[in-house]
Image 1: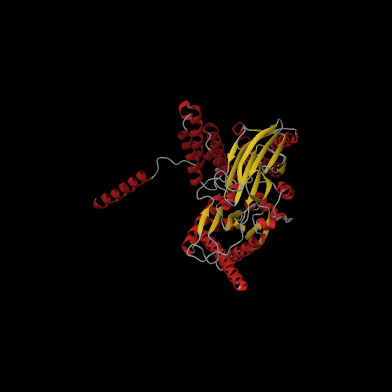
Image 2 (image 1 turned 60 degrees about the vertical axis):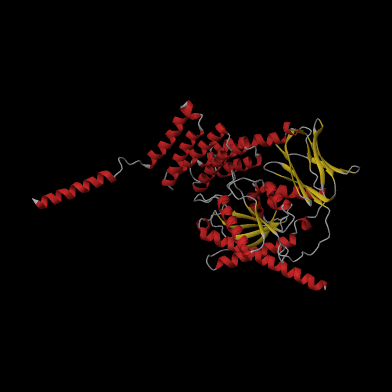
Length: 540
């Protein structure tokens, strides 16, 4: 009897554990996803919840929860697609910039992870629509539409994309008027950058007139936006007195730079959005060797600008596991910032220290206006070839190398065809204005800086990782154009490669990359110190 009681007790305890610890019901991945989709449907039907952004975001959290709990399931592609759709709906309702960025990010994750999914052609198409309609970035839109037509021919979305491409190109060929949307400037006593932004492709001519000294740019078949009517921006930085904009004639907008004291200037066009960038240099003062003080290091370097690429609504390249370039490079930049501050008597400025978007021309302007002595832009590479891997470092120059142009096109966010066209147009722009590319961007110093950073990355990483050395290359990168100091762009690994994406996800590998970049900077500064010392010795 006692034995039976114990046995019965054990059975009762076991039954109790099973009842308490077992969920009342088990939801399959399909049912979990359906729950998130029903959340969206219910929110759309409710007049109250439809006006509440928080209600929509709760549904977004349901999709995120599903994606986190069901990686690589048969339904993840559908979840990513629906989450992208949800975020663009939220954007259209509440106009939050972060929402359109989240939509693009989820579509991109779907594309990278599931290129063969039946949702993928539509994801490309929807990205194109976002860039074209919502962000007014026509060239980015064309890139997405072209990908659908080339990668998914015969599909409905390839047909729709082809129609969009045809309509855009037809519109561009029309004798249409463009609108000047914005006029911005950054300035110091040595340098001023003016940016004139348009809503489409533009043509211009310029001239310089004395008494009073001024330069004017006439933009053909253009009109001024409502916010810019007869606008004058006082500058007073010793280079420009002011910048004026006005409707010179019914079809010509004129921008006038009232000069104070300039050495030279140059202008060049950029895209996404369409804009003319005008760089003006002040009168150069005789070079003076730096005084050796506590504030001035022996190598004459006071300030370094570190530029983590992409950010905000622009995630950059995305790996198959969903790792985003913007996240990786920001983390490495912060690690490098900490290492430099700890190890060197040099000021460090980050172009961004959070997940925000900064246009490429503004990144260069930050380096110039802060009078940086070095500029380092950090990026992660990507390729349609999943086996592509390795490390390479770039400086600014023209190139006929298709692979280098492909990398630059991706970072410039334009097509390879357009990259080559821009390279030719950029050369023409420089011929129109004063200034020498080799002198202005300090090509020789940038080349030396690039080699030292590239060699340090390979040397420091090779002992722990099998890294491929692609060496130092050159191409036309927007972010390097107009930099007044030695400037380079480091492609630290291929996020599109399975093994290298896994490495980039590791904090240890990112730390190693930061340490390698630091070593390259120090090697370059050591060279600078030796060169200054030698110059003094030779002078005596």
